[in-house]
Length: 303
Image (cartoon, rainbow, N blue to C red; front, top):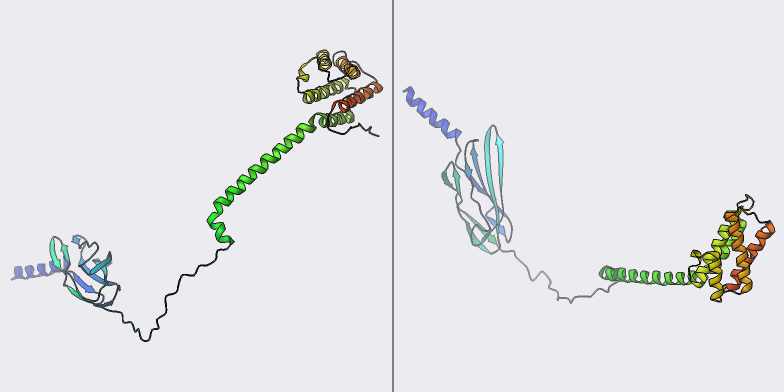
């Protein structure tokens, strides 16, 4: 007798311990076109149970289209509730059958009941709802912002090209001006700066005359386009006279400046203030007499 009671008790416990049959519900059986319907299947089980729900793809039947499928797991009082929801809809009027779904629980098959879903049409009262004529497409005039959005690449390209052209033109003009005014104006400015220096006050005759000779040679090189800075003083004067770029008086004045520069450089010669002024005046006069297309520039004494 006790053995039979134990068998009955064991059977009852086994039923509660193992997974129970699935429970299915449907959210509604009447819908309008395109409204979603949810078929939900829930299984009460323990942790060791193996539960396999059906995997649906696009449709449940020819008229029922699957929108999505989702699974949820909930634990309550150490009991696991697993649910599978299939959301679907229909887009034709009529009554359609939701087919039974197969669920495997520990390799045992269970089937949900089939359901009926009725799709009701959306009523349209054409008498109360006024009908309007189909209007033609109205073209909205474009504003400047619309053109800017559509053609901004071309605008940027045009601006870039114009900027390059302006840069090239200005660069050519600048080079032309520099080339035209460089030999005489630059030389005169450098002579003015040298005249204002304090080299002579500090007895820096070597530095003063070296710079004076360099200014004259660089002017000649730019003025007549020949390597004047690389020639010795005598060779330079000979070349100038041979090419008839200077006359006898100008050659004599340059010779006096270059000889004094050589003496100051190599023999520590110290010319008088009167001589340095004469040499500066001769340098200014030489540039004024040999330059082209520019007004005469005179050196003003600092008071």
